[in-house]
Image (cartoon, rainbow, N blue to C red; front, side):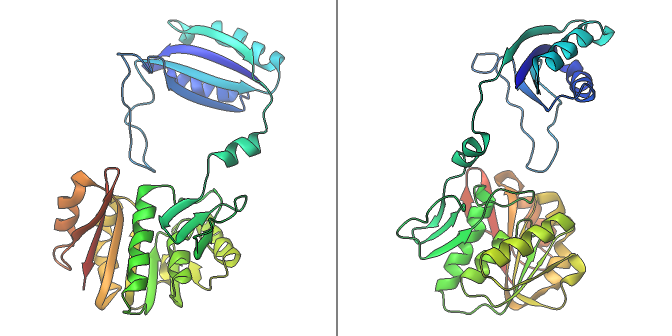
Length: 296
């Protein structure tokens, strides 16, 4: 594996990235050239949404190629292009061989939800104290348990399991990997629907549920029919606002609505969007994210 590193201004990031892709780079990534200095700039976007800019004022583009010849051909081609003006080749170096599978796996350790409720990748043994375990590996669909929004939803489910009120029907709207639906099943829920607009997410949800011994129905949004005692939606603030009438229409009298994917500063927006139906309150917070809940 060989790594070609380029320095470019912000307005060339997209052009160079597209060119590297056309030159058969295995991967292309963008970094802040001024990282770890006083000139470092924060550049954030909400999860699942595009970043506000393509790159930093001074960006480093890193492209990986399978051979030195391919990387050198790409370098020679790029420096001859008009759009390369103002850009610079920082280096072309061999990347040491690594066990990429083991390296990737090392980044995903078991995640504690409560002292006895854990999410554990299949290559780890569950902690001794874990009496409830979700086995889940990183995949195409959102939801591995590492994100604060997912952890807060699972914490809420763990508290619900202890309050003795029973589960009734459970709806996981925007299920992704199915982790919330699976969590509800592990904690005692028996009548669970999980829906998503992404067919790959639906398939991932079904596979993950089977691997965890949880019975549920998963499908596209039209699968959700009637009312539910618990409605879970871990998406993002904007779609949650749009979905307010639909989600609340599925909420049974006395049922619980649980919403996540919301930044602290977005709490009032969500309260206003749901005010015609329920009274949302902040039930949990973690790392700048909040969990909002309501009773019908």
